[in-house]
Each structure stands twice: as structure tokens, then as C-alpha cells.
Amino acid sequence: MKIWHQSLTTIDRVPQYRDAIVNHVRRIARPDVEVVLHGMSEETYPTHYPGQFITYSYLQNLHREQFVRAALMAEKAGYDAMFIATIPDVGLLEARTLVDIPVVGYGQASFHMASMLGDNIGVVNFLGPLADELRQNAARYGLGSKLGTIVQTEVGFDQVLAGFNDPEPVIASFKKAAEAAIADGADIIVPGEGPMNVFLATHGVSRIGDVPVIDSFAAGIKMCESLVDLRKNSGVYMTRRGYFNAKPPAEAVERLRELYNLEASPDPKQERGVAVRGSETNTVQ
Image 1: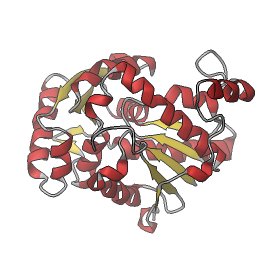
Image 2: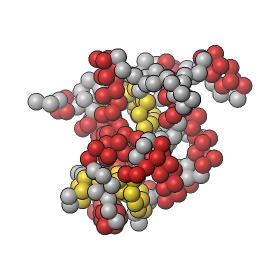
Image 3: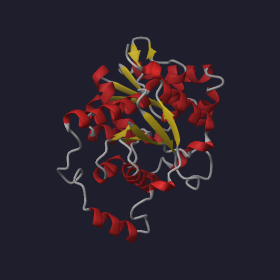
């Protein structure tokens, strides 16, 4: 099985995060699963961190095309699934309408996983402006009533990256924010961004007292594995009914992508990614 991972960061510019993802994939993916890491194009952001360039509706919508393009490339290149590894689930709905391979979003996977383990979902993140989008997404996923408080940590992206070498300040900040969410009623916590999630998983933070902390990255990869298996074993895959799910005619997609100066049919030969395979130690004995 081969899964296309798509980050909202320019992943090669943040080697601490990239390397942590590599190690995490080796821990969580099945040995027959290869996850290929992809980031945004080098020209997307003026700095190594997307931050302010993803917290505005219009700017984030411009980034959507890179996720759609990635989905088209992934299917054409023979991938079995795609994982949109960012909590806003950028391009998730659009990508699903264009390809028949499973497309899984970090946000949707983690919220649904959290809803099976608890009743009041708290989110701990460091990008405050995304709170409105997360609530809108949760409502669209049918989980709006389960999403409770959203709390910001006192550390940001750069501090999380530094935390891979000096973890205690970041862990302390996360626990402080998580405890505030728990005091406000949360009985399960979702880390709000990929770097924080992978950092916590790397350092073994999976509970705050009696409250679980979702490994959103693992939830997304495991959901990809499950949906690929489900189609292979049972023939079940994406609905094509309704405005938000119907697959448009291929010729219309190609013609309009050309009209808007987009690649009509992205060439998989342009792909650049880091391939990681699950470890043999992940098999169930």
C-alpha cells in the first residue's frame, strides 16, 4: 500500500519536523505500507513557516490548488490513498470529488477518532485564527456539538521545533493549555497542528491524567489503511451523490484547469517526496 502525505509546510525547510514525521511513520504504519512525504512548493512562503499565510480565508484558499493537484498526481501515479496532513483539511472536499482513491483529512480523522473515545473534544493549538474554521469543519462533519473549548498554547511553531531537542518547556506549555481545556469540560484532547501532534507523539505524551490525547497523524494514516482495505475487501468507497460529492466530467476538469492556467493533467514524473515504510515491529503478534 502506498499513501501520499501532503503537508501545508514546505517540509524540506523544516528538517526537524520532517525527520520526526519519518520516525513517527516508521512507528505507526504497517510494514506493507509506504508513506511518501510531500510539502508545498519552495515558492509558496517567504519563510520556513507558513503561519500568517494560512490563517486568512483567501490565502488558504489559494493554497487549496496544491492539494488538489497533489490528489490528481497521486491517483495518476498509482497511489492507494492520500493523507491531507493539516488540521484545516485544506482541499479535502474538492480532492475527494476528483479522485477515486481515499482522501483522508487530519482534522476529520482526528475529530471522528476523538468522538469515539470521548464526548467533549478540546483542541490545543498555537494558531488562534484557525478556531473559526475548525468549528465550521466540525459542524460539517456532524461533530459540532462535540467540539468544546479551543485553547492556544504559549509556544508557537519555532518553539515546537526547538522542543525536539529541549522538550520539557513545550510539554509544560501543552499540559497547561490542555488542563485549561479539561477544566472547561473537555474529556479528550486533539493537538491543533501537525508539528505539535508529532512532537507530542515523539515524546510519548498520550494522556493528561485520565484524558486521552489523540495522535491525529496516526489516526489519519490508519484511516487511510482502513479505507484502502475496505475497498479491496468489501468494494466500499466514496459516495458520488449530491453537489459536494459528485465527480465532474474529466474533460470539463481538464478544460477549466487550462482556462485558469493550471495544469490540465499534472504529470506524476514531477513528484518529489521522501518515502518511508512502516517497521516490521508494527505487526500484531
